[in-house]
Length: 219
Ligand SMILES: [Fe+2]
Ligand SMILES: [Fe+2]
View 1 (cartoon, protein in one colour):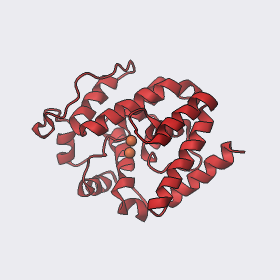
View 2 (cartoon, protein in one colour):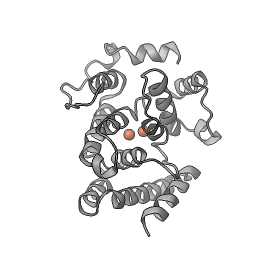
View 3 (tube, protein in one colour):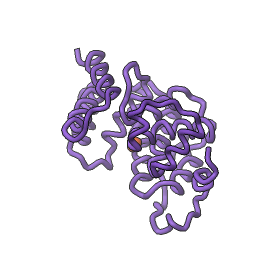
């Protein structure tokens, strides 16, 4: 890990962030949650910070149905966007420092890089050892075929958490309430891929994930 990033990571008193802090945070009763919330508070812009808390809180509402533990829900939800505010150059330094082996497409896109880098930071610097949590964080932007339950829950929550203003987020929450976890994952995956396809070239891993979800759960 490069020292510049780590010093920022552990500098909650960074004056450039003053005035953008969120006071008060939800109570998470899992080990180290308070530590992770403070880390995020010092590291992320307010909007992203609130989003991370919201993802974790939302995951707690359906963790049993998803088949994951409370600690997996909180850790994956809180930490998935830990590196979202890093600049492309910082992400590239972190990729080198952690020896991440990534595809050319991932390396070319900061939007696809913040997940893998966050997973590496969580493992190396925060001591997160749960392979499903690390894998969920690594792939949270695109998903991947044969993904684990933590990843599926994170993908759904990242799309549908209550602070998302998109109508499809509310719809995904409705599907979750009415039809359950699997139907909500199918819905979120389809909506996100359709959205991405209208604006960008769809990442091959995202497309493969969409096909896998549809085949697995959509009959
Ligand atoms: Fe993200
Ligand atoms: Fe996110």
